[in-house]
Image 1: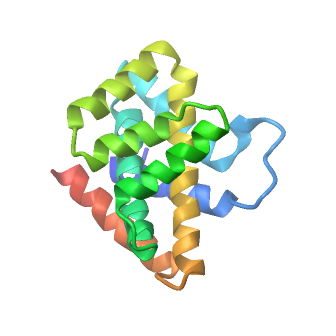
Image 2: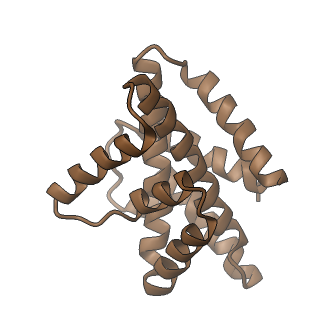
Length: 171
């Protein structure tokens, strides 16, 4: 099993590579779902959840950082961009734990972030794992947008994210 920070990078790479590809017949066969599944199985074998917890938090930190960069490009605050994203999800009629997690990170409210993750895991482990996949896909979409907008090439962004995740792992 790769180190914690490398699992996050593996998820981001898998999510980015899968973007635009047809979804496999079975969702679990998607490369990003495989990363989450391997982490969950390794944690289950050890009777813990260290890997999936780090995967969720590390990927959420990346997603938040990318959201902040995109907000800056739009000349709005991160909070304003999160409000826009929330409004679009409310219009779609869905409650989105991803946005709640990004808001908690933005507020540097680690207690709220932990509560959101623990509550979701306790209510529905499948939804918790889906959140990790969704975070990876959201981050991958942000990475692509940064390249499309001419802000940062994919490889450069992924390298910067790896540094961020490694620093978080070391803290």
